Length: 417
Image 1 (cartoon, rainbow, N blue to C red):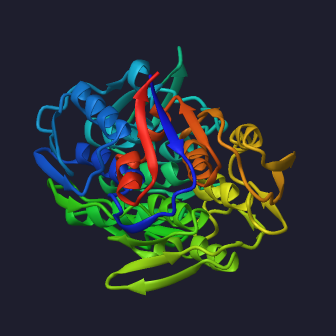
Image 2 (image 1 turned 120 degrees about the vertical axis):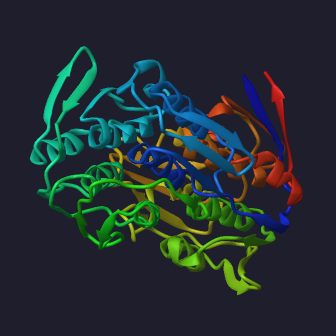
């Protein structure tokens, strides 16, 4: 396995291009199942999760060609409705093939994704919605089997605004008979991006990005050429990296309104953020101020930025209270930050962080994707050397992160353990 080695203390400066959004690319790639023919998806990041989705689509019968920032998917010969455990266990987003398979083939047999290091994320709302649309759902031997000659439009209320649940059911509804209304839908930009892609395929969707989405089913969809939005979480992560190193960096190819909540909190710390030539300039300050934050569904502060923000708070002036409301076990980075000298106390779903003058480099272990980003950010600011093992976690969601940071002046490299 690879490890990432960081010599802290370098101020970041320069420009960094934000890659395409992983969390938008994955459902859009899954949606290609809905139409027979070749779709081309652009601005796709080079990530392990994208490779996994490609392998899954290949297993279903598609022909997938992954190139630099582009994926071609020929779904003409999709005939296999089964997504096996061996592929689904490595990436929870694999469940996004469930509804496209049912909508196109009338059946799907998909391994249950289970939970992951940050907590259980059940798919019960996906299945409830499918049943309301007339599907028969059976669960046995760790697989969910769904059959429906043709799905029917329905009114579906989601108990919680689940992102993958909203995406899955929206895809199912595009080929259903009649009109489907999804209430209490998630509002993330990635859902709006999926909807735009589906509309280019011929789907009739209104309200994506709001909490009520209306989908009028059509008889068939056509293949699509579509470019994925930039990754708002990568943008936020580099924003924090620039701030914690007291640097000055420009984020290129990002959509600021997609991470308003992150920018608002960053500005509260004293960090200067200004628009500059189609991008954002981020300037750190000598002593960032501590701020409180609570993770919330979009447009609130994203859970995927909680760990990175906590890294900044470890060296901020004062005390910050960070409350995690989305996942029940998303403080796994706390123990590793403490190894670097951070003063953090966890009480249930709340972390109380007292800023310290500096962090010290240490050997660390990554536990999940965003925790990895948090520890790399902390290592950039720490005195001495930080070695992060299990670097494969970071490769699930950040494209060539050590190369991008090196180009900004960070002393960071990847080595084999």
